[in-house]
Image (cartoon, rainbow over the protein chains, first blue to last red):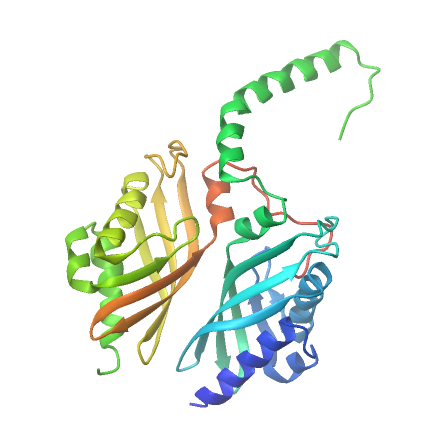
Length: 173
Length: 149
């Protein structure tokens, strides 16, 4: 069962994430491959879908370095744990760059059929990454948020009532 | 070690500890120098650390069940893709009970030496979990483009 070939394909995938040639995806992914990304709600399809993922992460983190920390392969499956390290100097998914450095772990599971990747699943601690670049509240901030949430809701109600009283006022987004 | 033996150790870990709450079995399954990693908690060391970690989650989700979706073994490493389901009727790391039913996806790589678990590295969808517990607004942090990321 070409375990070594499968592992080699997974190493090439990680290398492409790390700035290597994205063209390798045409060789290692089946045209109908389904990539369940941690961010996108729908699976990315085929080499083109996976290249879109690479473009997104390499635009957001142009200096991204990916290293494989652990690998398990059996039958048609290869799983890896990777360590990501990069600086968010480009915009990502519509957000402006934060210019902050982040290090985060991630796991991938690849399923092969006839020597090609047909399924990719990605899990990573999105929250840890967003926290490091200052785009998600820290644990302490969340506790505070939880406490002030009822107050904010109350304020929102007052504002919406005030808006109705003064209908000429433009709506805020 | 015959193929499948290490996998069975991990299956017992999920079934006995996570699903049944039989914490004492950690003494049998885990090495004294066990090191665990999970998002938000890196301190699960030794069998006692495992018991504490599992107890914390089971207190928050008393009906917690973990289903193994895929499992693969190579040498001393066992990989697992899993789905956790439960109702948050207790508090979790200071987050008050939401009463919400949650479903969470994750993966782990577990190392086993001489029949004992020596390390377990798990990653799961923390963001999705916090959304389902009502702590942060739902809807992933998406921009305009629908693909990639």
